Length: 210
Image 1 (cartoon, rainbow, N blue to C red):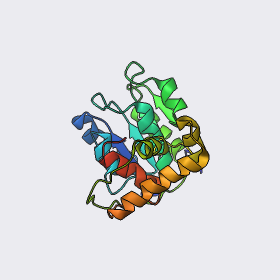
Image 2: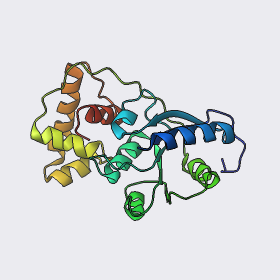
Image 3: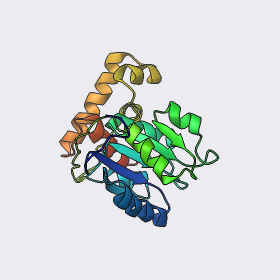
């Protein structure tokens, strides 16, 4: 469907991450009034808060300024894309390298001063498909991961395939596959969902790995 097509509310679920609380609220209110086809399902000031929300992953994630995050912008983009959420960056190039953001998988990277109507159009262009909502399980216990399992998980939640994980770790494919299988088994053993990549992104965020 083209970006100018008429849509009904709820066709595009949207998540917004920005560490300016006032801007978050202003964006949400403006979108509700002026872009009824965009359904803002989560607003968060940190990536951890965003990834742990029950609405994660939305169809599109709008990422603004995140000055106090310890993880890189590339990691956050890759995690969103791996979970099935398209990413639009709205930040000045001096705080977020737009070229790096696009290379990491962002659909678009726009300056902070971009007019709202243009941002809305970018969100619509980025929307590719409906993504099922992932319901998180409340953490009960943190599994004890080996260094290899932890490293494999770190790569995997950033969108690496199992073969790419193996290459990055300089190990055989079967070794990487075993690491990831054990990660899933250990999370399952403590009653924390880890069957899908999106589940592992949430687990890695909860445990401070991502």
